[in-house]
Image 1 (tube, rainbow, N blue to C red):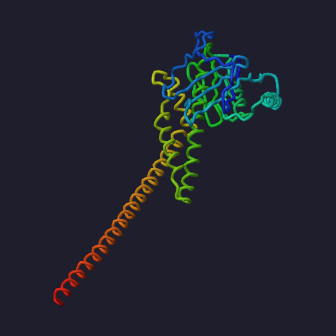
Image 2 (cartoon, helix red, strand yellow):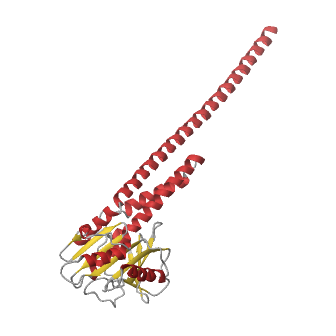
Image 3 (tube, helix red, strand yellow):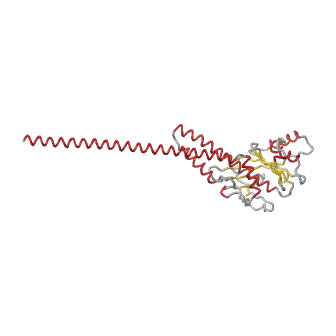
Length: 319
């Protein structure tokens, strides 16, 4: 793989044709139209494709659920940094971005081949320019491994390697970053919808929408959210996921969603209790009204019974 920038952006639907199942790995047979990606927890219901003509990746998470997320990963070669001025490099790079059809990426990943066994400051600057268009990311910000150096933050992920055959490790990380943003998108959307539905319920005293969203949010968290969505045996990816999770505050954002779910649960319980109390009060009032009517009827019957007795007694005495 040449020095590469990957731009990930969100889509509403998959292309209608021209997709092959994505295969990643050093020795995988690219001709087979079946995926060999199995390091995610199966409950995530994810599916990955490569577009035959453009080589774009299409990534689907939480498949066929109300929270389904679709992303496209677009690959472009980073322009070489050697022998040109930095502002000229930026201009060349920016023009490449402008030439792409979709410029609303949610994150970027940079892959850089190191020219020696030691990652240099130039290569780190090169990756930083790809992610941030600046040299802000320094060597001390990286995690340096024997096989590669890696950095992840809210802007994207950089992967610099001096070894052959590390392309597939970088490609795995594309999927991890896409999953992270799938989580963030869903949690942000559900949190905002719950807040709005709570406001509507309070204003109109109608909890139908709130109840429906509560069920959706609870189901999503129970079914799809994992602190560790990567299987334990994939130690390198487990560590990378931990870094991504921390950099994007995924656990904190999920905790806020859980707190909102708990608050909504309290509101729904309170509403249910209030409704049950109103129903009991209404039934009690109906029972009281019925008893009062029975008492009145009984009194009337008794009155006519006494009246009949008195009339009979009067007739007896008069005879």
